[in-house]
Amino acid sequence: MRKWLHLFFLMAAICFGRASHAQGRHVVLISIDGLRPEMYLDASWPSPNLRWLMKNGVYADHLKSVFPAYTHPSHAAMETGALPARSGIVYNQPKNSKGEWNWYYDSIKAPTIWAAFRKAGLTTAAVMWPNTVDGDITYNLSEIWDKDHPDDRATVVRQHARPKGIYEEIEMGATGRLDSTSMNDEYFTLDENAGRMAAYLIRKHRPAFLALHFACVDGMEHEYGREHDSVRLALEADDRAIGDVLQAIFQSGLRDSTTVIVLGDHGFSDIHEVFRPNILLGALHAHFIAAGGSAFLYGDSGLGRVDSSVVKQVVRELDKLPEEKRRLFRIVDRSELDAMGADSSAMLALAAVPGLVFSSAVKKAQVTNNGPGTSIQQNPLEGVFFRTRGGHHGYDPNLQEMYTGFIAFGAGVLSHSHIEGLSEPDIAPLIAALLGVEFKCPDGKLVRGILKD
Image 1 (spheres, one colour):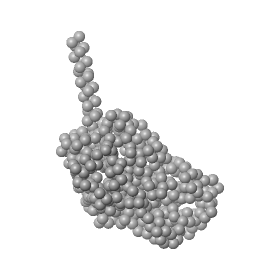
Image 2 (tube, one colour):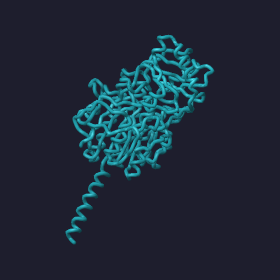
Image 3 (cartoon, one colour):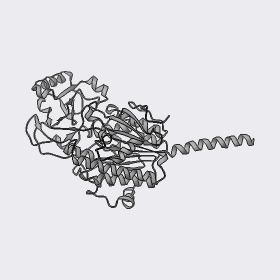
């Protein structure tokens, strides 16, 4: 009897140890909006923490975005392992948007890792993360702003922060008072304070999964293009904030149980010309929704499909353009959109060569700002085509300019290793595997060469 009792307690101790180990795992996911692979592969970029993580962990030559290569569809792919056709997040903004974005968690139509981790009893945290407002997340400080004041990333975030009082707790313990100046996407303090918020949550609450989003590199690339001192300064600020997060992990004694993943959502292209395809459609019952370097065709309301005869007429109108303009984009038919996992209700899409971007407008108008990259939609200049400057994304994710980056370091992943590439939907199953949680997803897969055997 004593022998069997001893065996029982031994097995119980082993099982308890395994359960404790699972609960003791941590993953910190850091998204740098607009990250490009050269920002860690090229030593001339000011990113010592990224390069340290790269050298001591696993890095990829590239991470492929979704179509369109946009922030919210890309982050939804990370959260669900699903491409836009199945995640339900096909653009940054709803199709009938009046300035609002896909901020809310219930916009996602596929199962999420957030729900899977919650069901498994794991604590979670979101800091300035897209698509997660009012989601069932333990510590939730998700990205949202007043559509009339898109630079302010403090006021509305405070209103939606959960649990009640967590925002004020972080102000007292880490950042000081946060307002529309210190949390403003025109200033690098937005990302610096987001890093401090995440570091505080790691030290104080130790969530099993924390997702942190930095916005400022993307903002500078929209304003100035791929190569500018302001882009480098924004990356330097993010790299320093990553250092704060790493320090919090190490000081909390979590280094051996934590995996840090740093990645991006899309690349960037310099831009020099805008195309308003809706001007060509006239009385046709069809409408393009522009998404930077791509545009998708729907019915008049912009919400549904149109008759195939109308699609043929649209193509004929596009083909009437002068050759020097027509060669700036290609037509993506429905079968190719299906293969790319793009919105299933679009009849076709236009995919631009880098340098050209689309606008949904049908006439000149005063510039309006509804958030990063949106001011390109309205312009006071006349014409189907007009000149512009700066940078944008939303192109075909297979273009090298749209490649973003990936680095993984720490518990459970290989060190001093390298892979060629992976795709955004592959992130969800990777995180689930690291945390020992089963998660089935429609498009993502575990990529070899990242996890230890």
